[in-house]
Image (cartoon, rainbow, N blue to C red; front, side, top):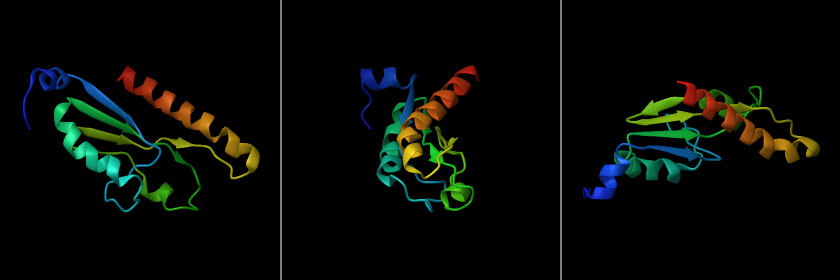
Length: 113
């Protein structure tokens, strides 16, 4: 890793990553593994990295409910906020809105910490 003036500036910054899918701690839930692989290299350039990956609440029907627990590794904190989603056509249209609401709620909570 080559240290430059730009990388020294970033070292004091935080990085927020919002992903539609992200692996769990053990990589059992294999969503967007390439994002996690990229973070292995990017994390060294930042003070802290926060990953937010909303997961629809399925009430235990799918493994994502059991596997997607918040975790951290090195300077990376991964959050899986739950959102309500009913698999009916009308509610599918609202999924994006609910997705953004849970992201916004979590960011506001993290800023208060």
